[in-house]
Amino acid sequence: MNSRFPSLLLLGGFLVSGTLACAQTPLSEKDNMAERYAPIISPIALKTKLAVLTADSLEGRETGTEGARKAAQYIASIFKRDGLSPLVNQGDGTKSYFLPIPLKQWVTDKGTLTIQNLEFTSPSDFIPVSRGARAKMDISMENFLIGVHQASDSAHAQDFGTLDLKDKVLILFDKTPQIQELSFSRNAELYNYLLKLNAGLKSLIARKPKAIFLVSSQVANLNQNSFYNLYAGTPTMGFDPSESRPGALPIFLFSQDAATRMLQSLNMNDVLTDPAKSPVQANIPFHLHVPLKVDNVSASDVLGFMEGTDLKNEVLVISAHYDHLGKHNGQIYHGADDDGSGSASMMTLADAFAQAKKKGHGPRRSILFLANVGEEKGLLGSDFYSKHPLLPLSQTITDLNVDMIGRIDQAHVADSNYVYVIGSGKLSSDLQSISEQVNDRYSHLKLDYTYDSPTDPNRFYYRSDHYNFARYGVPIIFYFNGVHEDYHQPTDVIEKINFGIYSKRAQLVFFTAWDLANRNIKPKVDRKSDFEN
Image 1: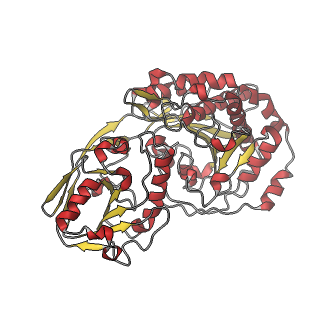
Image 2 (image 1 turned 90 degrees about the vertical axis):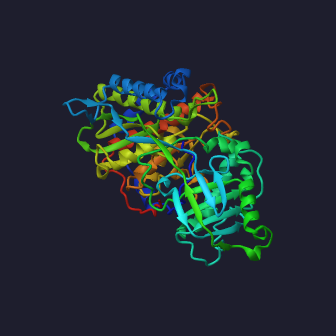
Image 3 (image 1 turned 180 degrees about the vertical axis):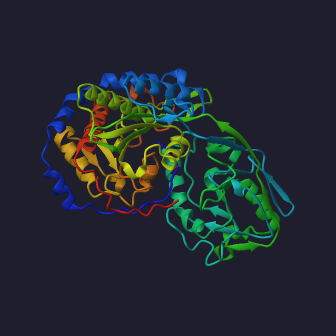
């Protein structure tokens, strides 16, 4: 699952009338067939596939690496074995399972920041941490604003008062309390800090400054802090570094040492000690130049298609991402749960549907099994597919996205018979009712809706591949086991997977997919969500 933190979505309530209507739907013979094929999704079948995906030879499946290509080839071999059809035209009359994703990778070269007579360099004095704003890393102006950000757990519209911030550079001193450790693996304290920081900066970003330089007590000495190792020299991946996402702007971490030198040189030390002196406009030259080195990346989504019968023009998508974090400092980030568990279950669902089809019980609707690449780099594979769908999104009835379902989080140690279900009621008043009815009929898991809360800071709804379907109006369900101590750590290994609850959750996805693929009426889309960039 991706660790970035997009904007918060306000959730709607669920319609009781929809629940009652769905609960009264009688079972058909086709419904009852689901129980015949669900046992194919067994612990041993899941473990066999997961062992391949987490093998040392795949080196953590980082997008653009040979390990990721091996994973893609393995997934395609399963699709071919199951008789799924390839969809991607090759230009010579043949079709492939591989959808090339035209990614680029760029890294900042040595950058310079000049303020009056002082010169600062990246990465020792400042590092870029924002994504999607690379085109704006050359800035020259004759003034900038300096201010203090007192806390990062609320919107803070009062920061910089009522000053017009449009096209201004802000140097922002963040005064939130020091936390203990910031690491490459993005431990819980770091991630919570970043979430709060994002929320705290939101109102400032909305005022459209040109750039923000953040001086944080969390990163007092950039080159001695492990947070520095996460970003400095770490390539960014995307589609075009010369273009920025709408509303994106560059955000930099500025070392406290560099900021202290700047304040001393400008005789502005009292900005930090006297709130009345903040913010202040410095009417002096400001020049920023951060060059980029850009390379092409070889990466592909993997698509396997099963054509339906009488409703074949409607499509159900079952998705998971097969990439993970790769290998760093000699350690392999195996990604057994994130998202080996989702990829293995998606392939095993394909096995079950393939066996059903062989026995004459194929789905009424078509099913697309979609293995996404680049999720950890910013939901890139699903982003590309949703913008260039091989099957019309207008005919795509639902995306069932599986991302981390093999573990138990701290909140459920006493009772592991659960799964987090996210987003089922966001766009359709039917889908959550269908999900609950299927669970009551077959799986009897506790469906935990904690992360559907509009006040939950994690914003998981925006952080996996289902989001790129939802933002175009396709209803989704995201299945998730919650974050655990091995999230984005080298210790996310197959030995820690709980295959009992893992197989039960995967079977719930199968039962739900079976219902959606065979029911008479697809889930209606009758709710709108205010998606933000």
